[in-house]
Length: 372
Image 1 (cartoon, helix red, strand yellow):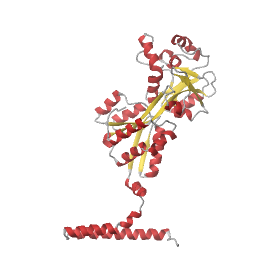
Image 2 (cartoon, rainbow, N blue to C red; image 1 turned 180 degrees about the vertical axis):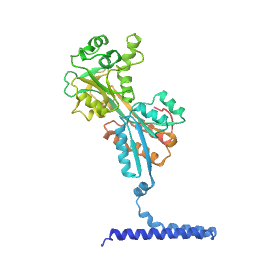
Image 3 (cartoon, rainbow, N blue to C red; image 1 turned 90 degrees about the horizontal axis):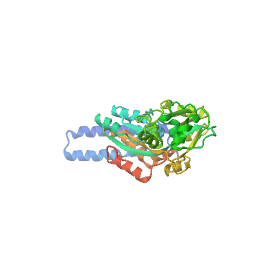
């Protein structure tokens, strides 16, 4: 069978398109003078004439029908998931442009309150005060859980002096009462008082971790330090306003944290599991004892909650912009079975079925406010 040259096929389609356009124009003109019966006949004829347009695939029609731009900001932890989703979505819908940033969860909620973005990410659930600020600006939000992440305690890859730390150890090294400690050994007295696993060696203690704008900062305090810190506050030993020592190297850039840890043999810090896991050649992931023994962070121990420092990841949507075709299609894709594969591709753990169903229900019903 002889194949029609591409140029000929294109010419044929163009001719058909011109004939269709002419027929529609003629029908429109005729309708001004014809009766309602004539209108019905014209519509039938137009529909019949337009049949060749069905040659266009559904996928191509979808690509042509969705366009626009989507700005996403917030958590640096969730940013890799959004980047993968945006890349995959753009392959299906190339006329949708994305701007994805990861300055931190807190900054994302502030941007939402200022009406700057339709979608923002958070590596922790939105705080009541942040929700109030957003609502005060006349904005309602839809809350989605999108995955699970562990927070890895890290040191330099070559540091063989430490393998496991418990919450008392962590507080004695990075809590507010450790302010001014320049070596691991400086923490020994406090560590013994707390019942930690010390004593520690004399290595220089260089700490690299997220800053206050980060959801990872908040989650680490809430999970790893808050119990010990609140007890010390009650006993009159700790400042009730600050849980973490202020004299550490804070950064909103996870790669800066990784490099700082890697460059100092006796360093200590914390970062989202995915970032630590992909840099195992540079950093050592320390096991953590939350009361049931030392556990190494892995996707399996995070999913099972055996690893004690884990948290949910969230995406929030401005409800007033949920009907935007590009935003609706993107969030639909995010929550689809295909979209969920990118959570794992980014190094995180999928939600259990009940949480995923809750997120899908929130989106389908445009349920606003905190729901988890």
